[in-house]
Image (cartoon, rainbow, N blue to C red; front, top):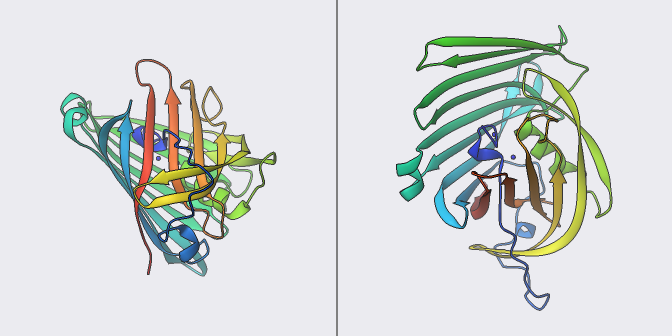
Length: 261
């Protein structure tokens, strides 16, 4: 996955590059890294219509939440170059999760063009309610909402982490219980094909997934969301692509750097 990726730019992306089977997996491949889940920092370059549009940084760290173990994640997206001159984006999206990847809170600090928003969502499983508060820092207005929680739910970013633990085979699918704080939905996720993907880090054997979260499911916008995860114990998201209708088009995230302790 992060608006979108809510953050808008963040849910997205990438143009898939198939490589001939003769190429071996790069020495930088995810198979050299600890099995997921483990602490990590992933850096991506962002393309919009094949133009360099900015950079994204995604971190995952273990956390102690009261008497339970959990995780915290931060997604930072910043536009650059020509795209930044046309529509500057500086988004920071943070998530707190408890095992097994159930979202407990999210926060979004978003500067997108002339808009500036602060969005906070809490998921209170004892009350079985989510609380959504969005502040428009330009118009000085506030929107609130609540939703009933059936149990453990994931936001779009936690949903990506959950997907990485499933290891689906092509042809298999699952249902993901997702929420943006305003509603809760069951979204279909399909494992579609094995493909080889080349990035600056090398060539990776991956499984391509499609998550059906747009077109009125979780997000109203018409779009397609695909994710390429390495076909190994790491399930590293090396490419993400959101294909939207005109005038947005395709947004692509491509992995440039993978850091882990």
